Length: 321
Image (tube, rainbow, N blue to C red; front, side):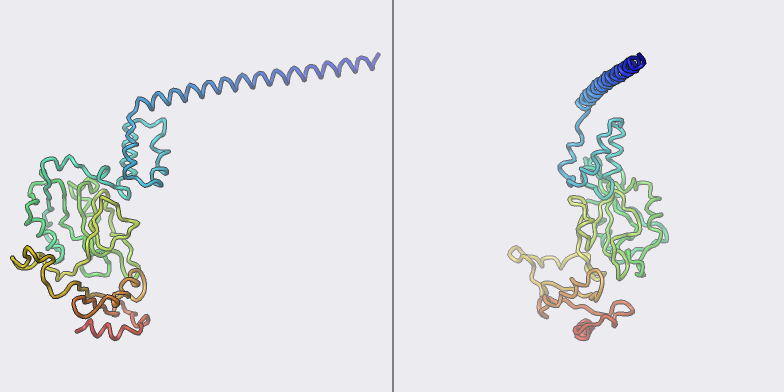
């Protein structure tokens, strides 16, 4: 009799466990179906919202690198961001390194024509002879305007050509001076000129201030920092370079390029070590002493003699002639 009771209790317990297990499966499936339906409704609502929103992100495909687009998509497609906030995010993302004409230049300012405004030189400030030539060339051109309200492009009167801290022409407090300009607007529609940046022997491209959304016209700009269809690569020229070309009539109809004694001339320091050393050390291969004159000196820096090579004596002698 007791054995029968035990078997009965075991059977009832097993039945109860089976019922509990089946009930649990049913509840789990019910929740799964509800969750699936909820996710389906959410996805459908998201599709509807996206269909109602303008697909402005497609316009970036013409000038975005693949890596940049892939990196920024999670921020641009966040479901809780409004169109206005999305535009703000876009402007913040592409305002500097990824600047292009479509994102960092206001073309509406150029509807009345291409006019260039040069900031007046602040009282007490000085600029280098080279920068004076650049500003003079702009002010004497037909594109110059004295009215900033007519301007499409703005050029600083602050001399940013030489950003080598060891140079006597290095201008201090440039960041503060630029930020105080009432028309700066984070550099939008501004053009900045630069010939030298960084300090020997590590010539980095740090100018010592944030150019923001300004166009950079720079010599020896690194390909990794150059912003295509936005920045301008310019040649490195000395302060002795003339502001204008030869005498009137020097160039004739059948004489292009104009007759001149030298085809190519360069005279400067030959970096024995560091960035730029490989390029300048190779210049002697091109130098022919006739129409191509490339003269370099090893006398650069206080310890240049420690890195002196077999060509230094001859190069220094030709350079000093």
